[in-house]
Length: 252
Image 1 (tube, rainbow, N blue to C red):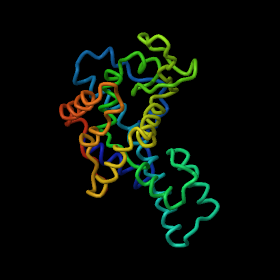
Image 2 (image 1 turned 90 degrees about the vertical axis):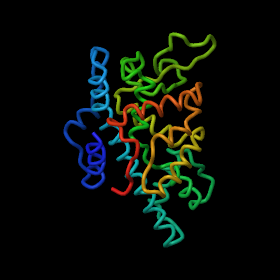
Image 3 (image 1 turned 180 degrees about the horizontal axis):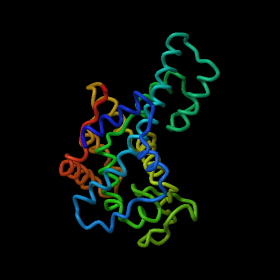
Image 4 (image 1 turned 45 degrees about the horizontal axis):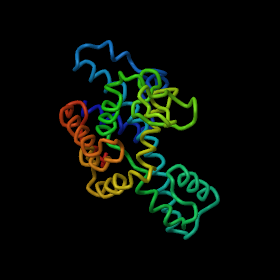
């Protein structure tokens, strides 16, 4: 599995292609019927085999955005200005990743380089498995929502059965599992609540690899359980290390 993870991501980056099986998973409107699988190891493997290509494809989109951002930075350093098309590209990235449009282009680029970056697949898989009970929760099965993401417009999702009186949030529904993965990754990369996660990853990048286990320590705000939630994610990554390599090599 380790070899599949690294070579799979490299194939997207180097050759810009997607295996046919990946495209099928990107288009899939629902998860495999994981609740019917009794063997725990088979369930984990099935879950991983289905979700991992979605994580890699989402990371590939981020790679392309980061490449675009680096090209914008190069142009700005060379000419001390940006073309109209580059200004538009920078504006779109800033809006997507919640960077202020009122600051200078140099500061926008600097802030975006912290936000527009990969998320180690092991961390994504651990959160997906934890939040969705390995793809068997009501929100995963009925809403393709693996990460417990909320929405606040009536009818935008599924109403939690134990929702506190007076609360109006729903658990967001997605047309596909892939959309859920992409929305989760954008949330981690853009939400100010995860600024420590983003900054720590920026520092880790200098070493040439990202460590899902260490980065998880900066996700206490993701759950009301705080540190206990983080420890559970880290334990899941340790236990499933044969399926989910904790380190993501950035040199490939």
